[in-house]
Structures are given as structure tokens and as C-alpha cells.
Length: 181
Ligand SMILES: [Zn+2]
Image (tube, helix red, strand yellow):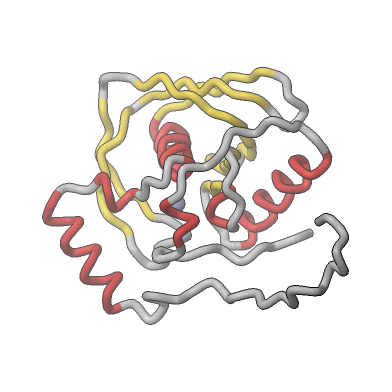
């Protein structure tokens, strides 16, 4: 069980476009496990790798008792939309109605590199779109109607976690004694 620290709004990793996964190795499987553990501890309906500081195209979801993950997702969205409440573990306490496609077919890979497709509607479709947005540095507040976005930004400015910075790791310039790292 490895619960990782969830990055909050203001952390640059949340605004960075994540890299596609190339190596479907043990490290990737550990990342998926950590994402699931962190998501379930929160608890949340989904979690994307950038939210734990890893800029890779990986997310997990836990919707209607189905836990899953997807790597390097590409989405087909229905034209029909849904409009309902949405929140984000990186924006604690915020919940606003957000417009999303009603149905989604998500193509990608599982952690072993097998191609998979996930079909979902309503809550699952919302989670998949929200998490895939995270991989492009997009947050749900970007998608809100103008008034809701204004209200959200006000809450963020006044939140006690606003501007919280990731800790700076100080490393000695000679720590590796010339060895490659
Ligand atoms: Zn989120």
C-alpha cells in the first residue's frame, strides 16, 4: 500500500502535458498500484498520474464499484451531453456543475501493454473525460460556465491550501561522486 501525496492546484505538474507511456514495465505497474491506493484512500472516483507528480499518460477510476486503469487513452465522445456536479482531488472542496459528453469510448492499454477499450456513460464517462483532461494539463474549472468559473477562482484564492508549493528537494552537487544517475 503506497498512498502518495496528491498535488494541489498551483502545482505546475497539473498544467503540464503528460508524456505517453513507452515502457510497460514493473515501474509502470507500481505506478498504477500507487494510483489505485491513493485514489481509494482519498477517496476519489478517479486519479491521474500528474496528480501524484508523475507526468505520464496514466489514470485510474473507481466508479460504481468498478476499479480500473487506462494508459495512453484516446477518447471518442458522444454528441449528447450531460450537465452535473464534478469535483477534483487537486481542488479540495470545490464542486460545480460541468458539461461533459454523456457517453465515451476510451481506447488505450492496460499495464501489461494489451490494447483495451472502456465504454462508459454518465459517471464513468465523466470520470474518464476528467482524468484524460488531467493528462493534457486541463482542470475541470477550465470547462465551467463563466459564472461558475469566477466563483471557483474566488474559492481557490481564499482556500487555506491555495499556493501550497511542492517541497524543494535540495541535493548536494557531489552526491553521486561522478557516477551517472
Ligand atoms: Zn481531477
